[in-house]
Image (cartoon, rainbow, N blue to C red; front, side):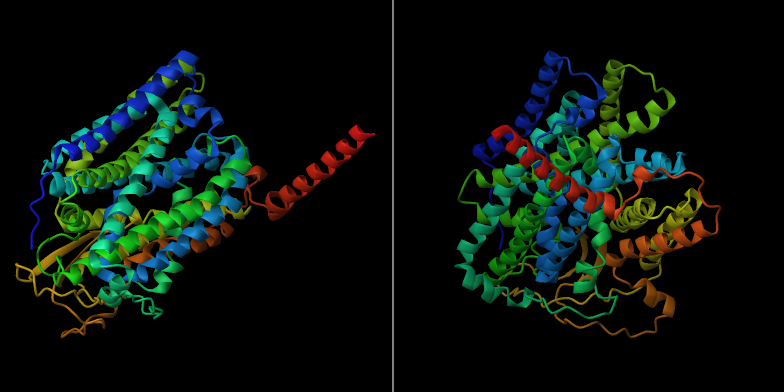
Length: 593
């Protein structure tokens, strides 16, 4: 069972048009800004704090919906079932928290980067530089991982060597981001949102038609409808608890990243910033749900053909699932494979451009401006463009580095950056919710949380812990032309982890595999699902950070604007609205008199 589809002229036209449109938008905004003489850092990094609600919301959504969403979500559902749908719950929780807790505290401060908050809160730059370093490392390697994953998929679909597409993607994104600034990023994101959603819908609808309708999809994908996963065993890869509850820090970390905060600060007022989060919730959920449904439909499609292409050995890497399916589904419709590549490219462009823009803002505001506060606006803009190019080159180099690393090392790295999410969230949460915490206490807590999460990762990778992840029954392989074999299953999950697990393709048991040798208590601890790492990091960092702060001298001065107060940020805001309504009525009555 193979596909011999070759890219047509129509496919290449759609792909090239996507790249050119993104590039031209950057050029247009650069010329427009020069014509309007908008060369200030506020214009370049924050669009003059005048961004409209709809484009900035769509930009926020696609910034964190990279190719990992396009390839990773369907693959996870294909292998581990629709239990993955519980991963939507923390999206709602985290973004609602951001709208009503984070935005009211951060927006009135009128900052440029999220890390300035820590300087204002504590009066020093210790935590500012710690979190800034973590954020820079996370953004660089996240960009590189996304780029590499996309380019490997393109190699499968288009036959282009991945090194060539890595150079093309990084160069195009770096150029239009450095020239056009945040406005170019936002408006290209709008275009890319439309292309991404179109690509997801095209694959899903076509697969449903090929299977024979929704009822047939339900029939062939019955084994993937494993929603009843409420066990408390922390060693199970996916359950309701580690997907729906303890994953909140994974999504909350998004709001404490510079790309998200840059969009908050680019809006004209608190109301718009809050609405950006509230509107993004249903759209975010629908996009993620669409890719999950795509995974179920693809499993049903191959089950109906009697060949599970992964367990049947047709593909040897689960990340090839969606690209291979696209080639097979649309082999008789020239142009649609090109549409999928355009969607995949858009996902990569959105992540790359947003990260590059945010890194440039960080270097200016948190490094250059701290050392030279009187630097001119024009010089800042020029330096920022150069910095964007330098980070683009660095991302290019790291992407090639990742491409030459073995799977286990990539897994080690990905788990490492995953350990940053929980502790970083703890730093900001403690800073906003507790007047008593100190710099030393919070820093000590964050180091403890990060160390424990990293220790769990290292223990899992290097202690020879057997893979006890329960698998769902594999699909039929009767009509596959390749005999099932053993494969290293390398899956990139939606929050950046890459997990490598050697498993037999013919594994059909849904229960935990019983070992034939003894496992120590420490090794059992290392078998905790990686979905708990961020939560463990957050909990340890918050508890230890607060207790350590109590052991330190109480801070003499606290910037109250940096603290969250329910009366001020929630009740006070409602009272203000009520006062505005009363005032308007009084003015109306006076006008009538």
